[in-house]
Length: 484
Image (cartoon, rainbow, N blue to C red):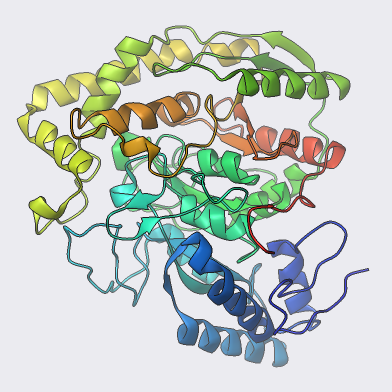
């Protein structure tokens, strides 16, 4: 039985039960039923943010007054009996790399003007129209470049499971907030693994949807990048993907709309699948023995559920070949940021921008064509299996500050370390495939496993993740690094 806790209680702002903190879908149902008000939820979460965030640094902006006003409007709509969107009155935060109407866009940089935005990004607009109440902006590294959430602008964001460690990046602010119970759900984005990596390190569910499924005003990084959410349950992830998949999509290329809602697919048995075990890093990386052991444990659990588990390689995946071409693409990653003071940008991003300026158009176009052509060969891996299983991260959560050590001598070194972290996630970005990280196996500091589906198989990935969650629940786990 769930006990309703007063909004002033800082430990459990919305009440909790034996399964852990409430999910976004559960809170939406309670708000719609009049069991709890949006204002009560918002006050509870804001109080918890004010208390716990100083230790985490997960938020760079908290919109107290705006969130309260939106929550009051949500409660008024419930009182009038008006039709409600699926997440009416539920608090969420938006990653500070994406425009939010009325908020300054900082991108964790001292080198850009922090302009107050006059519009919502398409995915942000979809979340607003789904009824979410925006409570603030979460931290990222400058321009989202690396796999930790540390910047000169905002400092370091810490992992709730161990405050000496990073929550990962670049969506580490959202991951830390959700993992610490500061929110039920957080917006995120992923260009090489930036949803799945922090999900892995923080014990959360994090999915990179298929290319084009989430509304966006451009195909950033040639379609490598997309947006999503960080959650504690597969159902929450699936229900938000339904929001994205049915929203207007203004970009050139769009995938087919799902025939069955993702929320429904996540609750269905996936049937017997052929699962391919894979330990091929796309970048140079040493797979930590703990990550490999985790993969084997996950494989055993899948076999126990009746799936066929086999070893599977990705044809055409060559580390040196891929790194060379990825670096050409990645050097241009800050092209959408209007920089006003190059000298104020962090050393790695200055180095990347300088490399991009020195590049001729033929070099860039050739690299992109190479990636596309080689992709056709790599897709063949999914002719043999339904889902590829890997560790999400081949390395353990890094110590705060360690990514930057030695950058004075080699400004590319932080990127090489970030690439190592992303070496098992980036393939799904290149191929535009759906991939999800789930905290399947319990550890003192989390480390996730990744499921990568074939083209447009978001529903299959969610069904398998949901089956794993039901068989081996994880949402009751809470971090031990904070006084929660």
